[in-house]
Image (cartoon, rainbow, N blue to C red; front, side, top):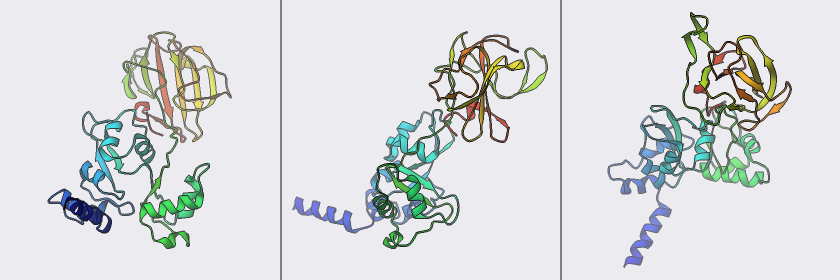
Length: 308
């Protein structure tokens, strides 16, 4: 009798939609409730519980509001995915996670790609993300199966609409994001924005952030790129400027020692740019760290850490 019961449950899992099974496992949940969280259907405004993500066989996604004490590792475990998947899908390494912020969560392992314009095709997306050594035809078949696309998608070049989300199994993005330029730090002595300048004795706009550190502390690139300036630059003192492949730049000021020259390629968190000092317009040993967008606008460096 026991074996017969187990067989019936097993048969139900195969024959009936996952949402109906979930309604039995989670009393009070409508069997159609989680249809709103499918891959190609935009999710509803209400966050489903993490338990739903672990119980439903097919892939679903939603926005999760970060609560106090949560981190990317605990969220990956709760929703049945992994850290690299969440980082790839959100284009964020989540080095810092702010309470009240949002993160796109889902129960698959790979990239949940968001279509940014009408007319993007299965062939185009698959060709872009197939990866070295992976068979394109087999990869397209996986995408069709995992996203519930019609089999005809493999014959005709299936088109997606703007805002569609396409699950790309086992695809991870190598994120070129900003990191802190120091191996460790304790505090920020002067933040980005308007401030009272300690030397000029008046309010001025501070284009970066100041990080007090012992004289001689090693400074590394926040992102990989090419050195476009290395030398003395007015109030910056000894300064290194690194340009990145997207056209943005980072500046590292008040250095006591310069370790790179103009035109040199530098690697994120590995190449030694120089050492913390107090050169230029400075009241003590610290690093001035500045990020400039491709359009020439200075932005808050701390808000960019872990992001592009």
